Length: 72
Image (cartoon, rainbow, N blue to C red; front, top):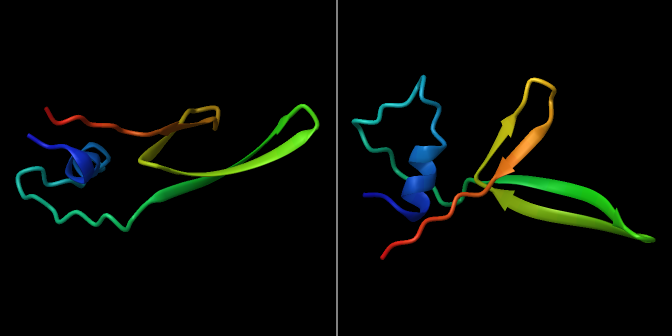
């Protein structure tokens, strides 16, 4: 059973090069960041965020993904 950084690490590995039988050390200092510019009425807004991964469609549109886990 995995949660937190361990789950994020396993869930975002490249399946072609991953060795799922051999656990890899988790580096919590590695992150994927994005800067987003938008407008709200007359206000310009710049946001920065950390995401767990990004999926790019054939059209080039990016879908940012944040994974959340809950341990009960």
